[in-house]
Length: 117
Length: 112
Image 1: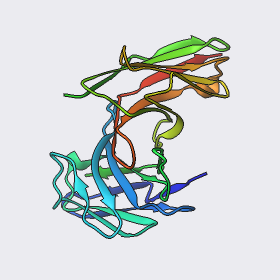
Image 2: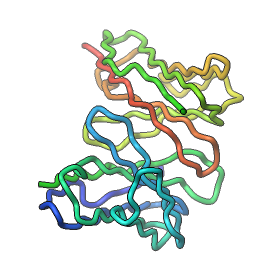
Image 3: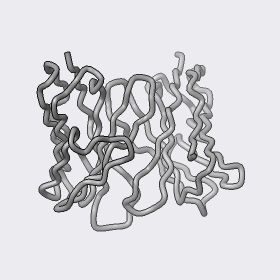
Image 4: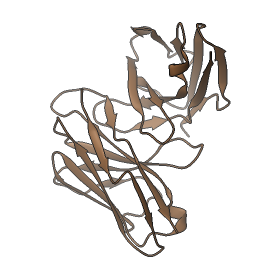
């Protein structure tokens, strides 16, 4: 089955630093990847849709200059949280559609726990 | 605005019984509905997808129904096992590669 990996799985950083999270589709090509954020006891909230070779589409209320997304290849998308602050502490999850068909199934990565001190 | 409602309170059920979880939605006409399983500290795992023109879908011990008139989906786990304990999320989508919207999830606890 389709596998999506994320790295790192957990990161702790100081306030003001930038953190990069990688999302990879391991055995399929993903034209589109999605980035979500999940706070405790809340639902997954879509942050942005990442399209290979083009600019990401951000959801309302998500600062594109703070959450930089780069989808440089069909198997890799990165999310950089710039100048992270404690309120950015959350569980960040990516997903990808298996490209080339009409499947509506998203395959999720294992998530990255970000803690900003 | 679009709203997806899942019972946010935990559902406790005895092992061997059938667990039934509910997903209701308003102000939405989804092309399909999905159910995912999420374990603590992990990403969601896809379970089943049901389209708007389908009434029921089955996969092993899982069964999903979709009533577009009632705007409701029911998710059943038959012969539940302690290993089924997790949070179950429903998600609604409009088709293709477009985004899906998730409910908050219902935590299921299967008691041995």
